[in-house]
Length: 167
Image 1: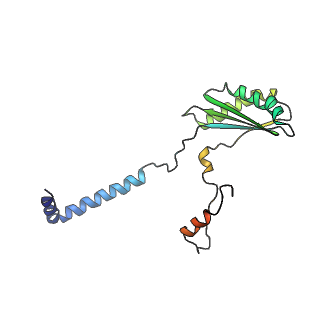
Image 2 (image 1 turned 120 degrees about the horizontal axis):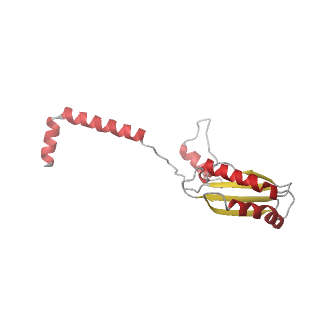
Image 3 (image 1 turned 135 degrees about the horizontal axis):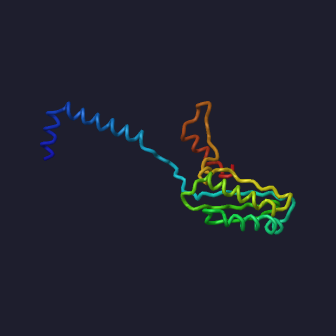
């Protein structure tokens, strides 16, 4: 069977080359047209509320800012988890939404509820929404670029391993 296929291919070189070119062109076309997400965003849709309450202890921030915000955000449509953290002079509330929720829709709902609860917060407390980014945005924190062209990729990679993740 294989011997017959080889003999046919030798006898019909033009057809084999034509089929090879067609399959190669189809492959290149498919590669260029295939949507590919190299880093799929598997993180939850979340909206962060940061509230500054200068000069206040974490317990006061918890009682006067974090608690009212978290209890209000529990009633946001589509919210599945609400987490509140209190620090010295700062409060962070993370509202996590169900899978498939549009990030901008979620941000607008949180903003609506934030406007409702603003009157229950102390006048010095300034609440604002966090950036409209997901956890995947934290992957690329720096890049090493050799503008002089004197180092190759291996040397740049060796330089990179000398830095810590907080550099």
